[in-house]
Length: 258
Image (cartoon, rainbow, N blue to C red; front, top):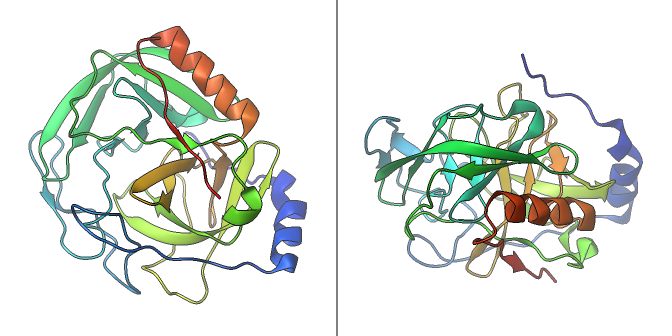
């Protein structure tokens, strides 16, 4: 059974980041516009009624403006689109070959694909190839551009998902050795927070940048969460190589974070 394990390599970086003092920022907009952080104590559920074998009903409220059409919640071994044909997963908790990959768009419309190829990335990253691309109403997420200012990211709100199809808001705490670590937002300014548990591995986390949800991490550890940072040069280089190896017709997109 896959187990979320502690990452002691981040302790020093977390301590330093917290000593500096962390500032956070918010977002605006809603469904059909710019994604927005949910208000305090907003219900975290993405779906009002989820069905893996048919269309789903999306929840109203704080999660409605967050586009999760590129995240496959069909299996606890979550897969997230980074191109119309490539997904990322936790390497230690990846779906097997020929596994179905189910997505629901923003209106709850269902599609299914199948995993037909794999290429391991750096650290706890596995890139998977779908049997065919998804249509444009299912969202591949950009990654942070290499060279994005990690100091500007420290303390920023991050949208954290779990295997129960919920959205939480944590804060970015620190970076180190190709990873990113989060902390709980004790001010409770947005939504809810949670301690990640076994089964949450591979679920994605996002930072809002303008109209984009930028994929910054997929979970490796528990507590507030930590995992590979997709803006790290080595991690992103390995993801690009895996994408080219599996299907060079598609490329990842990046967004500079300042």
